Image (cartoon, rainbow, N blue to C red):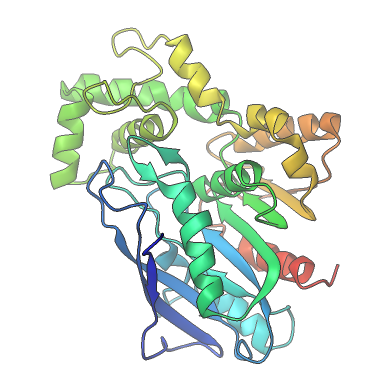
Length: 345
């Protein structure tokens, strides 16, 4: 029997027409995780002003790599957060109401990709089988009206959870989510190998130093990105670090067996195995900027082409932006999900 729990604060965060709470979740499945990351975590939740009067849809908002759910709710003197923008639009009567839940699935490597891995922990299980039931236990959620969305790694996570947990979510949206791993990770392998070669460090030595002094300058981001993805996509309890790289560090040539394990997570491949789960969604929203620096615009076009072949209904949007500085895209995605989940198609 699960002993996971959620504690609500006695006060709300300031600056909202509705209510933003920073709850505390004690997780069973993250307890004793391989990296020693906390199993007691803060969970930001946004509640519309009338949340107690009627059941509302629930939208799970997933942060990108190196980010946590907190980033979407934190107020800033110079600009409005994602939740503040949604709150203001809701107060103006411009959007439909929904409860927003923003999980903290950060790891010491920078992120979990919202997957279950023996090298990082059971983060997919944590979100789907712990957080969602706890939120629905404590708040007035419209039965079955769950959606999931996110940007970058959060967009990948949205697709992964929608595909691997059929029936849990009625709608899913990916904003610049990882797709076509060859395009978005191929150049990262080269940069990671270059950075390690220049520093003369092994992956183990890099991670030991990074734990003391995190530095994403130069090739640092590529190195931690590749190591984190390997921990998520190619765990191996028998290896030194608990995972294997999909290439060797001397020649940067692919280890085909390990690379195949990565590709099984790639939405471009995974959609073939999880077609029915995708078809069952009431809304599948996919978008990317035409100036995306990680080449995700091309990966998404390839995914869309494949979804058309598979007969999966979807919405495909392209915009002029890049990969960074596009939180305004949530101003489109969140209202769209809330409208669908609330029954206003």
